[in-house]
Image 1 (cartoon, one colour):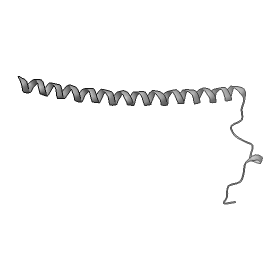
Image 2 (cartoon, rainbow, N blue to C red):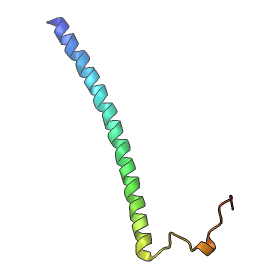
Image 3 (cartoon, one colour):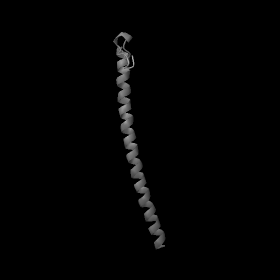
Image 4 (cartoon, one colour):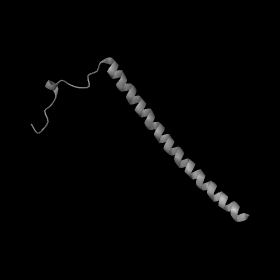
Length: 66
């Protein structure tokens, strides 16, 4: 019985560690999602304001191989 309790305690400790690691992953992913949402919102606003993303050819610098 004592060995069984010890085994269960070890398993619980391992599972708690795993949960903590997964929680950290979720937190990082949420931070990335938040940043992507902000960037998407910024780009959407630029599109709605008519900001030009592509410059006319006359304003483009020719590539170095020309």
